[in-house]
Length: 133
Image (cartoon, rainbow, N blue to C red):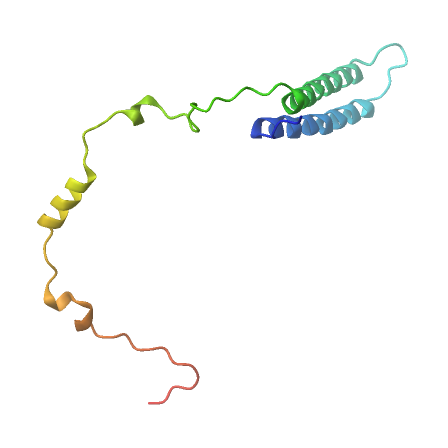
């Protein structure tokens, strides 16, 4: 059975492909150095060893991705919370939202009658076409 794909699996998969492409670039850079006829070219060797290391890291990323897809899934319990919340959210702070709303409504000032929507002048309506005076 295949486990569901999560963001960690996707990051390992993307990381593996990125490491493979960077490895190819590093290998091409190593190939561009001239060959030493007297022995080993150290510039070429350094680049090819670095490319090999990147391929090994890419292989590890792919291995982790396959292991998370086809590995054992953790058993879930029915009593486990869906989202892990910090303990500070579960504490009762003593704040009553209904009482705060009642205090606000009791203490707010009434709007002046001139501020009502019926007393405001209407803005001129936009018209389409030629304006007539």
